[in-house]
Image 1 (cartoon, one colour):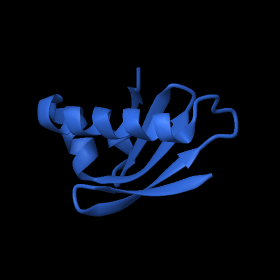
Image 2 (cartoon, helix red, strand yellow; image 1 turned 45 degrees about the vertical axis):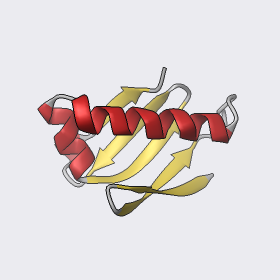
Image 3 (cartoon, rainbow, N blue to C red; image 1 turned 135 degrees about the horizontal axis):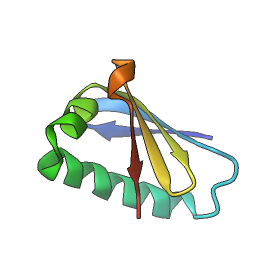
Length: 79
């Protein structure tokens, strides 16, 4: 499943695996809160990844952040 979100004035696709047990609305609320927190308070490497974010993949309780540079891809816990 795919949902488009608006993050830092960019449209970013969020992909969900089929084994997600939480409701999509709860995951999206956790994801948006976590992303906003990390863009303001995160380390430089995380902020660099968020600034070049192209897609997000949700796997269980983790968000895999895919950026333009393959080296900047990170996994972020939602809980």
